[in-house]
Image (cartoon, rainbow, N blue to C red; front, side, top):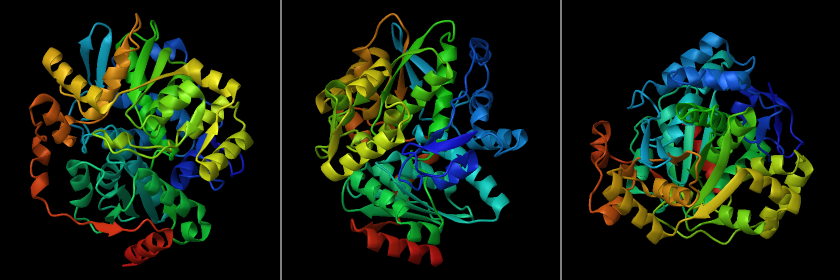
Length: 462
């Protein structure tokens, strides 16, 4: 299995090389050269299997020669051993034909754990084999950072630097990043919003002298291995509801488009997904793009669902690559327009291709709070604000096909919003009960590339 860049000008890499590289050297994102195909029999055989076995069967065709079967099975077992639910991704029913897939039982209470715990183990094995050390720099709107720190803390072969927007993440999200005591992890609060964090991260990857000097690696959803791990729970959930013998639909609260792009790949592999519904909060650039064809940034308004407060959705580039018939030059031109002019217009043919796969919707702040309150009263299920955005949009797309909404975070990560909606303050799980008492380590940084690079070089050398 080989991997190619969405912009068509970077070297073709193996799975291991693409994983360790992160962002392609032409600025693009890696995707598989060919998408493995699963037959109806292959999919039917997944029903009822443990999550780890489904993970192995779904991901193995993408890994190729990079790991042995024994290595990969052990990596998967270690990745999910710390999850707080035996099913890993349990499902609950919200109403007629509407199900909630709980993806928040990992060590940091967010769906990012499914990918990050796996990546941590993959990096560890690959780097030990190579005798190398890397510097991981990540940008987060809240959940990726804590999941990355949890996955890489204390590892000898990795230094981890996480950029998060100062004052724009929840207190639980912040503390999960700032309270680990291991010397190899560094939380950096950047003056700006998530798009600023993501832009500086991409600038570092595109500054090749710095990139090579510090052996820069990325674990944001620009990293293909992140998307790969998320494909698994689409198969796991769909087969639980009868796939491949009946189709299913998914609604995904998304900001950076990685989680729903994983569903797109699952569909391309043969999973019978009828609708993939993009759910956005008030920062609704993806919904606007799908309805108007114009992808135009308009500034980020802070919300009660901060992980979705994004205007530059990195993984949308991967979807555009397929919508434009895998034309890397066309994608590169669109990304140049986005960087230079703040937006671009999707061609009619590409927009039609996107609409054949994706639907979309949005939820306001008021609608999000109302949904949390209503679901608590009707079902007893307490939703985090992001999951509530998903539920509200999913309800607008219900039909005879079972709908699965992805619950992306535990409500205790956003206690203020949940309490405002329900009057109940959701408690943290027992293993995190002392989070508010732990001491914090954090460095506030300016939105300045040179200063960030100097700090990273200094910290990794010390």
